[in-house]
Amino acid sequence: ILGFLGIFIYFLLENFALQFTQAANVGLYMGAIPLFTAIFAHFFTKDEKLSRSVVIGFLVAIVGIALILLDGASFQLRLKGDLLALSAAVVFALYSVALKLAPKGYHYIVITRKSFFYGLLLMVIYFLISGKSFHYHSLAITTVWLNILFLGLISSGLAFILWQQGIERIGSINASNYIYLVPLITAIAGIIALNEKLTLKMILGGVTILIGLYIAQKKSSQISN
Image (cartoon, rainbow, N blue to C red; front, side, top):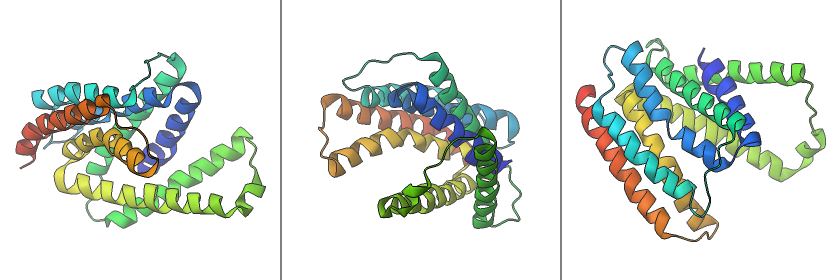
């Protein structure tokens, strides 16, 4: 189930969404993951409940995310891509709650390894059935392998291991709230690594995100404790 939800379906929906809508739209819908996670956790777990502060924190943080992602651009609704992105957010929220409910007897690395194995297996099966072409000659390029290793080991493998540990230690709601920081960290990385311009909207967005995160964490952390 974890491999199906978090590895196969989530990445499939997110990548399809990027083909039909703007990256900013996808980023906004990903910002809804904490709210969806809180809703699912409220109904499917015994110790995590949806609180007013989680909802208020979401509303504040999503404004900050919009300020950063839509800086200099306008939001354009593209139904197909937006629905795919929204579906991806729902699926990842389900994955996070499923992680919370996973059997406690397994080591987190074992769970992550099995999830990736079955998720990758489903991806290969889908790839073969869909009949999509694959440019094998690209595997001879060193940069491609470096990208694959980084995405596989760091962005996916290590990130999912840390994500699972976070959920295990502080719960799915508290852990998911930190997703609000992704656009802020991305903007900072862009300024440092790509020499992108720092704008007033970015600053306001970052401050708003931090306020939203604080509000969301304040109440839910008391429930967790």
